Image 1: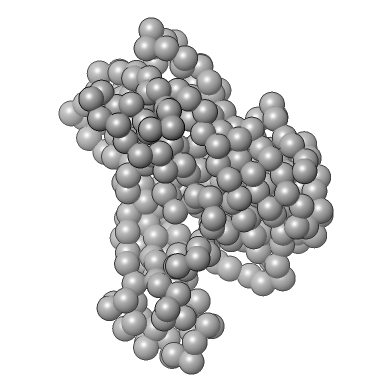
Image 2 (image 1 turned 120 degrees about the vertical axis):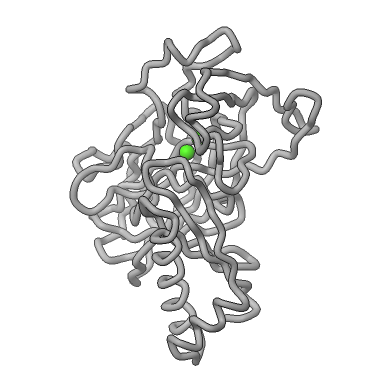
Amino acid sequence: MKTLDGEFIYEMDSSHEPVLEIDPGETVKVETLDAFGGQIKSKNDTLADLDMAKVNPATGPIYINSAKPGDILAVEIKDIEVKSPGVQGIVPGFGFLSNQYDEPLVTIHEITEAGINFGDLVLPIQPMIGTIGVAPEGEGVPCNTPGKHGGNLDTPDVRAGVTLLLPVFHEGGLFSLGDGHALQGDGEVCGVSIEVATSTTLKIESREKSIPTPMIDSEEEFITLGSAEQLEDAGRIALKAMIAHIVEETSLSSVEAYKLCSVASDLKVSQVVNPLKTVRVSISKDYL
Ligand code: CA
Ligand code: CA
């Protein structure tokens, strides 16, 4: 198994030279930093001292030998090992209620086998990857922003056991990931999850098929993701992609698929805090 450590980017961009090349179907273990770039180690480290140029690192990019523009990159997430401690807090000017909660605050959360220490509570560990994507079409996109290329999707379903499907825009895909969360709720309302460094194991291949937006293939569900400035627009991107997927997978017409979504799919908010918001639509595989 190949490993990748210590190579970071802060923007997903086709101009970046790949730091690892793999063959399709190869497994790779990637070390990722937390979203603060590992700059916060104790509650005495303040956000005021944060070097913003080192926030939101992604490890990569990885070149996948078979991937060509117009393909899908299929990223099977085999394992996400989270490292203790996790960091949370309030970043002034960031968060869904940033005008109400604007005092900087850093909290450090020990993570043990029992769970995440959160004051008097012990929360379950549900590891996920917040930022994961390929080099976008055209201009580079900062790692704090989601889009058609993936990026800062902050979607709890991006967890071990699923396959994330991403559109490929450039030869080799130029894939990277970072921003692990030990736990995140839908919305990620204060803008910060239990931010952790991870060792993430992935099996990556490409498929000769096109998709308009990132999708997740899990054992139970198929999920489409949309990102836009407004939640409604993000929801429409995800819903249109789901209708197209249902039409492709079943004998239903487009309007029948739309009606099926109204009764059998769930439209859920992934995050409301990034430069573009992310919404997902999920449907049970029983209906496909
Ligand atoms: Ca994030
Ligand atoms: Ca994060």
